[in-house]
Image (cartoon, rainbow, N blue to C red; front, side):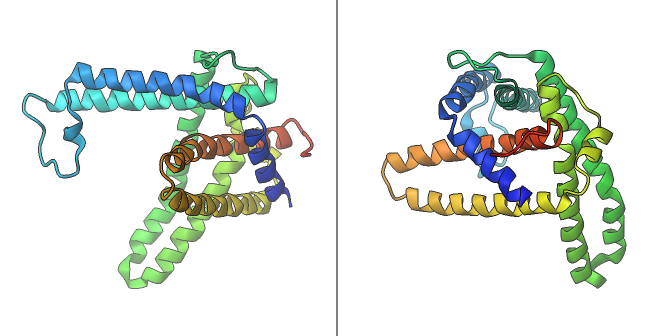
Length: 255
């Protein structure tokens, strides 16, 4: 089935290019860590301020400082995540190999990628409004129906998101496509995407089970958990978008 083939190919791309995965992710992650530490130092916010038990801001820390810190934190994380995603798309689709541990920082492509993500997010929120109104009208009197409707429509929106998601790698490689082109290119594959989502979800569950076992292995277990959780799983998700673009836009064959 196509959904299964896309998932397997995406996993194979990651595990078959572990050197490039490290080159693309480690450098940006180090930069992000340094910038986040700098944010703590500049704002003077102690780590204890984010403790769940903290019921107020520490002495000398204003709400403006916290707002600045959170905005900066979001900007750093977003920039690094999109930097990594763009670099991976370009490596797979354009064979643009990273040099050293710092992939090329292509600001225009990263900005375009962010814009497409924002666009998809806004579309999904707008698409949710009609069902949100219906659920509000149904209220608690028809709670089972509301739950079923929420789950069914949620799955529908996720499938739609994945159908449109091929605009992301397109933006990353500088070959932008419209939402209409993305939608038309994925006509008739909703079932395959649903299979892809189910397989990816089951894979996540399997990995979580592995994590629970690795916890009992000193040092090595922690290292493997961090490696799989922070590097491999996110890269597989990005690779799924990459594979979908290759299949539906470039008409590549899955080996």
